[in-house]
Length: 19
Image (cartoon, rainbow, N blue to C red; front, side, top):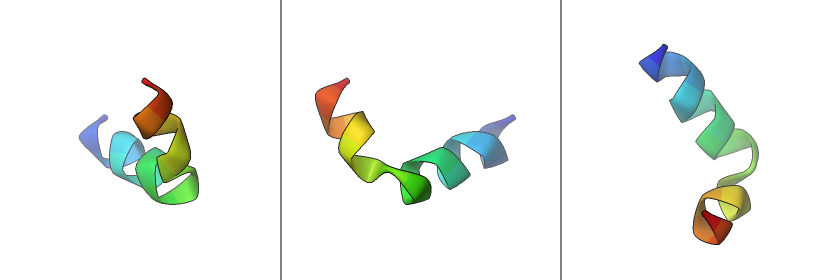
């Protein structure tokens, strides 16, 4: 599950900033 989070962050790190 943690791996998926890393992948998501790499795919669209901009989204994390919005969070």
